[in-house]
Image (cartoon, rainbow, N blue to C red):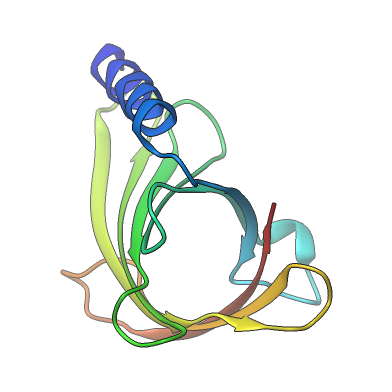
Length: 137
């Protein structure tokens, strides 16, 4: 846990120190209209115009860290994620995931629509279609 805290602190210091034109974002992914509280929310930060890092967590032991690259096509992105889940009294289990999606501006202030093809765990190859909303500050 100490290593994770140091990693997150170092990433934040490096991001705020070296990124000149960064902006914060907030997103709700895998949005389920019938049960919106079960949706995953995350905070992101654009380190450059093409690279965004994001973090979502339910508690200190269960979190997801992602990095997106927007330089593929105009509105298309590739995302790599690491998800950590911990069971009571056991070590954390880490999964590597990936996503391919598009960010479409809705024309309502800075609200964007994001349809995605997501692999939650690359080793268990089960792609799914999800969508979300992103708000950029």
